[in-house]
Length: 165
Image (cartoon, rainbow, N blue to C red; front, side, top):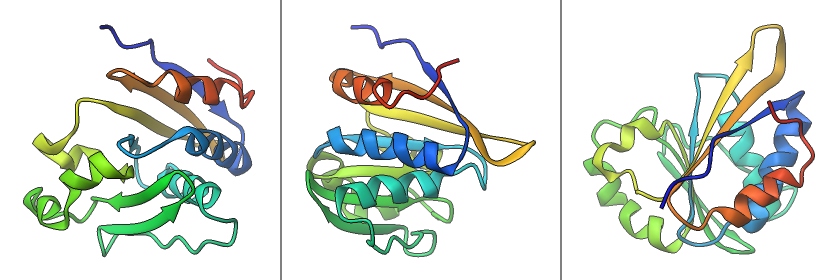
């Protein structure tokens, strides 16, 4: 089975990023893994916060898991794990935290996924956020669906009406 082609979106501001994240979160369920790539300041945490708030409630406190590695939440569609692997010392720490089970039983939003190493699952929605130098909140988002069963997620993104490039 081949993966669908990458889709590129131009997100004009933080609200557009939040809209896309919320639309995607509405269709995510346990076992869905979303990898959030991009440099520091690209909007990975903003994207994750918007997704988590849309699955919980608008006032949900969503601290960065930079120092704790993982924050977990109870979402409408199941448990959510938000991970920031920037400070990860060894991928073995993730096994101790239960990541292997979480990737089966929870929605996983993972920042700095290149640190997963061999724990990276075969079925992921790989999102890369690229900030624009000319505007702080403007960014390009490239979405790559890897593995089966991402049709509903890709359709949800299409329905947000953000321009594609």
